[in-house]
Amino acid sequence: MSIENPTTFLQSVDRSFNQAASALDLPKGLARQIRTCNAICEMKFGVEIQGGYEIFTGWRATHSEHVLPAKGGIRYAPFADQQEVEALAALMTYKCSIVSVPYAGSKGALKIDPKKYSIEELEHITRRFAQELDKRGLLGPGINVPAPDMGTGQRMMSWIADEYQKLHPSDINAQGCVTGKPVHFGGVEGRMEATGRGVQFGLQEFFRHPDDIAKAKLDGSLAGKKIIIQGLGNVGYHAAKFLREEDGALIIAILERDGAIIDEKGLDVEAVSKYKLEHGKVEGFPGSQFVKNGNDVLEHPCDILIPAAMEGVITHINAPRIKAKVVAEAANGPVTYEADQILNEKGIFIIPDAYLNAGGVTVSYFEWLKNLSHVRFGRMDRRFVEAQGQKIIEAIESGIGKSIAEAAKNKLLAGPNEIDLVRSGLDDTMRVAYSQIKEQELSNSKINDRRTAAYALAIRNIADIYESMYL
Ligand code: NAD
Image (tube, rainbow, N blue to C red; front, top):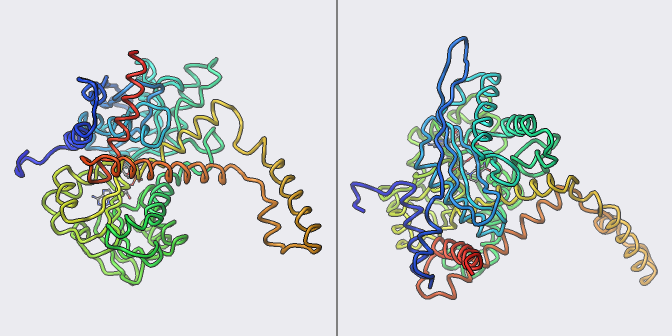
C-alpha cells in the first residue's frame, strides 16, 4: 500500500489480522474463514418527520457466528458507511475472544446526525430501525445483541428493548436483546462507565509489568504521569476522570471537536466536562491554553496519549511526530496500519484497541447474564458474605482479646453490591487478558508487538472453536 493511498480502517484491521495469522500455524483456509465477514445487511427505511418522509440508511454486519449471539454497538453518525461497520464488526469478533466473552462480532450504524433531530424524532427513528433489525433476524437475546457506541446511549437502548418486547411479548429474556440500558430498565450498574473504567484497569495492569514499563521508557506508576486525551465523550470522560481522581495522573491536554486545551499542571476533568456541556466547546476553559487545530496536540510531549474519539487519527503523516511513550487506544481503530508500523519502529508502546476498550463489551456481557438470570448481582450472597465477615471479626477479637479498629471492621463487614461485583469482574478480565496477550508475544518469536499478540490470541481461540466444530 503506497503512502498516497493509505489503508482504510477495514484494510488496517485485515492487515493486522494477516500479520498475526501468519505467525500462527493454522490449517489451510482457516484464517480466511475467521477473517471474512459472514453477512452485512443494508436497510433503507422511511420515517415520517415533520409532515414529510425521510429515508434513512442503516447497516448491521454479522462478522462471525462461531458462537451466538453476535454482539456489537450501534453507531449514529453522519459519516457512517458499510466498510466502517464491517471493520468494527471484525474488531468485535477479536475483542470478544481476547477478553473471553462468549460472543461473535457484530456492529451496526445509522447514517444520521442525531443532533439535527428532536428526542421524539430520534425515538421514532430508533424504533423503526429496531423493527427493521428484528424482521431480518438481527435482533434478539440469543441471536444479535446491540449496545451503545458513538452517538447512541442508554435512552436509545431502552427504546430498542421496548420495541423488541412489544414484538416478542412472550420472550421471557426479551430484555437481553440489547445492552447498555439504564439500570431501572434492565441495565447493570457500571455499564455507562465500563469502557473508560476498562481503559483505567488496562493501564493499571500495564504498570504492574516492570519489563513493559521499561520497554516504554517509563518508570513508577500512573501517579504523576502526563496524559493527553482526545474526545471527552463517554469513553474519554470516564477514562480521564478515573485516571486523574483515582490514580493521580495529570491530564495535561484534552482534544475536542472545536480544538484542544492544554494545562501542564493538569486539567480538572469534571470541570472541563461541565464547561463543555454548558458552552458546547472547550475553548475558553479558564486557566488553559487553547489550540485551534486540536490534532496538532496529538504530537505534544506526554507519557500516555489516549485517543478516545474516532478511528484514523494517527496516520503515516503525524505518526513520525508523536512523542508519547505509550499510545493507549481507547477508541476503535485510532491508529492506521502504516502509523502502527511507524510507532513500533519509534519504540512507542501501543496498547491496542481490541484489548483496551473491551470494558464495554465485558460489562455488556454481565448485563446480558443479569437479564437472562433475572436477578441482580449480589442479591443472593451479599448478606451471607456480611454474616461471614461478622464471624471472622468475632474470631479475631476473641483470639487477640480486644476489639479491632472500626474502619477495618467495616471493610470486613461490607458484602459486595452490584457495582463492586461488576468492577471486580471487569478488573479481573482486563488483568487476565493482558497477561494472555503478553504470553502470546513472549512465546512466539514471530510476534514483536502487543497488537499482533492480541490478534494472535483472538485467532488462536477462535480457531480452536472452529477446529472442534469440524471434528
Ligand atoms: P461519544 O460520542 O460519547 O464521544 C466521542 C467524543 O469525541 C465526543 O465528545 C466528540 O465531541 C469527540 N470528538 C469527535 N470527533 C472528534 C475529533 N475529530 N477530535 C476531537 N474530539 C472529537 O463516543 P464514545 O462512545 O465515547 O466512543 C468513542 C470511541 O470509543 C469510538 O471509537 C467508539 O467506537 C469507541 N468505543 C466506545 C465504546 C462505548 O462503550 N461507548 C466501547 C468500545 C469502543
